[in-house]
Every structure is written in C-alpha cells, then in structure tokens.
Image (cartoon, rainbow, N blue to C red; front, side, top):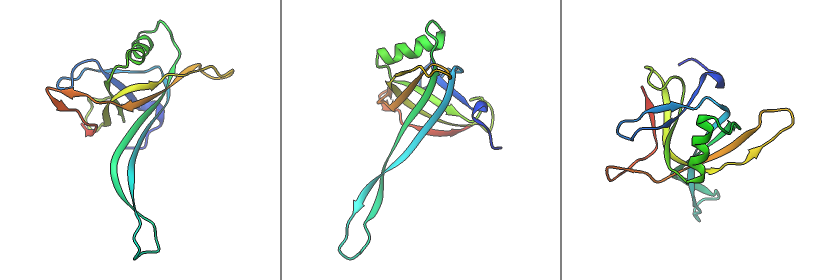
Length: 149
C-alpha cells in the first residue's frame, strides 16, 4: 500500500448488521484520529533497579471533526446516535472498504462527546469522541478487529 494523505482515507458507519454489514461513508469530516493503546501493569521487583511494565489490555478511541450541518442526512443520523447513546459499528479505512488491498479497523463505538466548535476562520464542527461500546451479535461479543480486504 502506498503512502496516502488524509483526504484519500475513508470513514464508515454500519447501517446493516454485524453479520451482513452495509457500510455508509461519512464524507462530511475533517480530521479523523484513531487512537490504539496498550495498558500497562507495573512490575516493581526488588531484584531490579528498574521499574518495569507488562502489556495488558488494548484500548481505543476515535476522534472525528464532523462538519456542523444540521439538516444534513449524515449529521442528523450521528447527532441522533449521540442523543440516544447508540452503539454502532464504525470503520476507518485506507480506501474504499470493499476494494482489494484496503486495510480497515472496525469497532463498535458510541459517541461519548459531541462538542460544537465555532472557530472564527475555520469550519464549524463537532469534535466527536467515540468510545468503544459493548455490542453482541447472535449472543456473541463483537470485538474490534483489523481487516485486510
């Protein structure tokens, strides 16, 4: 995969089911940042002069600058997801989601923050924060995953 700039990347939300996803592209966004982190467990042994760590559970969040566009289809859907505390699958992709070679990270997230930024010389936006949410499909936990088409 060649190096790409942000404008070439894609953001999607799933309007279908986990088993049969229907990915709708969210085009009305500025900056998108996917945070992937590993927790740490401290290891403090008397035999070492170093404070060491062990990796623990993975965590994630998704930060999106959504253009403020009340009345716009995608804006109204996402605002509704926030107000109703809806857990949905989203995917952040290296290109069109069904194209061979595309890499994407998908996760069940809910919108945990929806502030409204009104800078004087930039796009008015809602700098949304998405936090991982609990989602089941057919009685099984839906975990985040990295996919290569």
